[in-house]
Image (cartoon, rainbow, N blue to C red; front, top):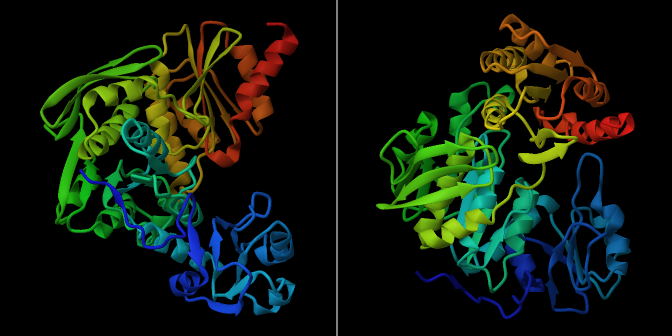
Length: 477
């Protein structure tokens, strides 16, 4: 397999570099001032991290305007600036190039696409209601065992984050992996127009953002924009166990690779074993079988691993490299971080939450041997008119799984708590703050118990483990 970079300009060295003429062509910019340098090396949208020679884009948002930082950008060494308000051009020194566009965010996207098209390498787009970031991180880890990989940092999966990822591609880049977030129709199509993916992975279709799109069917249509954007010789990697995702391959003219646990897929998992600190399964991939060990809990992480394996095998990574990469892989950023707090096993899964990821996390907690299993759950956002019903349904599932206690934080989670009580849970407590929840948890949980902490990002449930540690330390436990 040949993974190649097409050198269309001598300016591309160790970062995205653009000549004045390329900037004009890439984003339809009007040159207001021609500076001293014929090209700009690197693109910046933040004067706190700008470097000498960069091209600075004055992005505008609801609470900020990058035009206010043009002077600082020039003082910090910018060789060029892109602005959308010509009245600010007077603040740009004569030795700095100034370009005028209608929309600086669109200009950033155009530059990112222009740079991406310099490369004849696989670009893998990943989307889904749950597991996008973990699948992206796993895919990056597996591919890095053989290739130089450029990938989305953290979960920066919107137009700006994806553009900056593409702009970080260098001559050494052999594969690019980008995460694609979605809040409505057309957003993934826009991301695909920037990234031009050649491989698409869809993990699942749940109920996140259902408040915006109204139904799972509509969520599936929005996610399917990734597969629709792939070229005819592209590859779609689809979760065969999710009927919404599986259907995305029906009209795709390219190669479809299905993965899952419940069918005879090209990449499938069997003999899954869920242990206290890891999960093991047998992966059968393209008629080769090998055992995989994950430092993660829960069946949902098996699915994410299968998607990553499918991408790695499509690009020629052998099974031994895959096994070694998983042996070294650990989650980051409040994704199933296991903490020992005074003998209490705390699973910090607080990075985000929706009904499907909650249910998956419940199963992961049960995987930990413990005297008692407790839940500390915050509100789930962006569920629209269904928010009360979906919280209620999540509470019913918590009760059905037999947890020993539930502590909720926030007004919506009171519906979750009410349903848990209706389902037979007796130790159920609801609070308005993480501080109150941590105090109650400290009184409830003892050494040998296991606790799940989870909620939507805006609830800041990551504070609970820290507060719990503080309470127990103060009390001398």
